[in-house]
Picture (cartoon, rainbow, N blue to C red):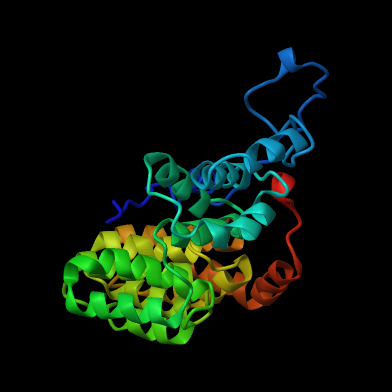
Length: 313
C-alpha cells in the first residue's frame, strides 16, 4: 500500500507570507532591469524564460522510445514545469499505462509536486497517472470495491479515501462517492477523518465546500481542521471561482468567539489566499468587502485569470 504524506507547505505558499507579514498591506515588486546575458541572471525578481516553454521535438522523440514508467515520470515532471504539450501527451498515453507502472520514490516525489501545482490541469494529470500506477480503472466496479474495503477495514481507509476522491474527480460515481466520504467526516478515528478530507479535496465539486467548513469549525483535531482549511484555500481540485463559495462561511467563523486562536488565524489566512485581498484580521472589514466586491471577484475568477501559468497557459 502507498505511503501517504501531506506536504506541510500545501497551503502557506510562497508569496502568501507577504500578506501575513504586512497584516494585509500589499507590497509591489519593483520591475527588474532587462537581462541581456545569462551570466547576469539575478536570483530574486520576475521570471526570465529559458526557452519557449514547450516540449522540444528532441525530448518527444526520446520519450516515445522509452518504457511506460519513464514516459509517465518524464511527462509528469514536464507538466509540473508547465511545458506545453506535456498534459496532452499524458492524456494520450495514460490509458495504455495501466498495469505497466510501478510505485517508485521518483513517482511519489513528482506526484506530490504535481498535486500542488498552480495549474489544475497538472493536478488532474497527476490524478490520472496515480490511478494508472495503482491500476485502478475508472469504472463503477472499482469504486464499489474500494468503498467495500473501506467500510470493512479501518486500515484500508487512507488509501481508499484518497483514491475514491480521485475517481470521483474523473467522473466515476461522483455523487455516490461524495456521500460515502461524507459519512466518515465525523468518524471517531482521527486518521480516517484526515484522509476523508483529503479524498473530498480531490472531488472538486461545489458541495464539498460545506463539508470543509463543517470540519474546519467542528473537528476536534487541529491537524484535520488544517487539512480542511487547506482544501478550501489552496490544495485539492476546486477552482478559484469555487473557493470563493467558502468566503461567507469563513467570515461567519471569524465572528465565532468559541474558535481557538490557531484556527481563527487560519480563517484569515484562507480568506486572503482565496480572494487575493490583503485585509487584516477584522471580520467586519471582510464582511464589508464581501458585500461590496465578493460577487465581482468571483465573476473575475469565472471569466479567467489576469495572469498566465508560465508555458502551460
